[in-house]
Length: 386
Image 1 (cartoon, one colour):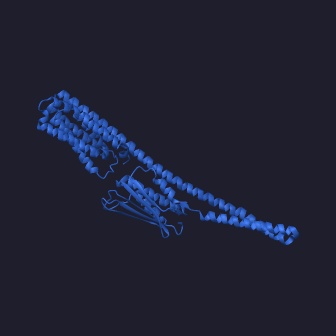
Image 2 (cartoon, rainbow, N blue to C red; image 1 turned 180 degrees about the vertical axis):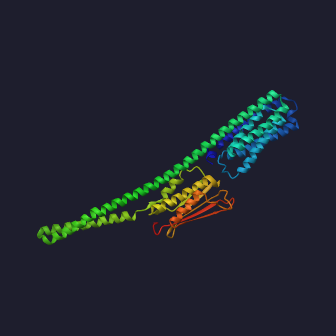
Image 3 (cartoon, rainbow, N blue to C red; image 1 turned 30 degrees about the vertical axis):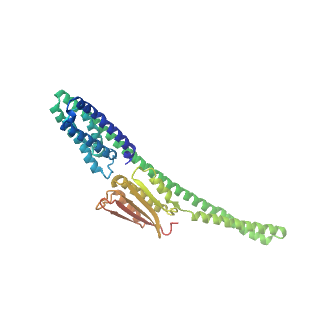
């Protein structure tokens, strides 16, 4: 999907331009030969010519999806085969070297959608058919030159497609790792902030609180010993000390009440910048959790859902909901991918289930063919959610 958005339009323009330019010499040849353009062969050639163009129009953007996540992947492969057959048909009807160049975009698209060995086999097969056609219509020397040239360009297209696939996958992995790093950083920042506030609250309570309490006791003793104006000043000092002690306790209590992790920010940082599928978030505005272990488990749950959609689901959209339910936080995720009759939990899903069960939670997975995957995770909080 990422490559399709970035290069699908460029592939379409370049491929269609190649289609027109490669066919121009054949059209000029037929134009100069009397009666060529009115024969049945030219009509069939023209039909193959337009079939190639229309099929390339429909497959160019889907073929640019290097991961094969397009739901029309099988249809695209069929249409790429149609392009190959149309090219060979045109060469057979009117032998012309320039038409063989149309096999290069076919090779490029096939290399993007198929494994390397299958792509090489595809190129070898269509090159062998091209050679057979050329050897029946051209001299041996020209046939060898035309076949070798077409094969060379196809292999070059194959190598560029392999490089593009690897580069795009690397960028996809980098984007995912970047998102995970940002989310982890947010979670660590929240945890560090809470730890620092807890430390400061403890210092206020232990140092100022105890000293103010001792000061109040000494002022109480001084009040019984003082007389006249001195007694008045001692009473005012005692009143100020009690007020200050009350203020310190209020600050410590407020800091303790706000000792919660903002899960919403961490989840938003996790999904930001993910190239595909398109992620739809539905989060409650005030989603805070006191326990950092539970917050970390929920964040890793969302991370595994996104990773699964990226690698396996072939989904175009992913919906993630995180909400409070009684004394628990629930994560519900579903995609519009290919689905399956039965889900075999891999290392990621198994690790997610184990992590949730250790915290008293659970994980439910549902899937149906062509109806995507639904994951429901629940983590109890014991009243820790605000």
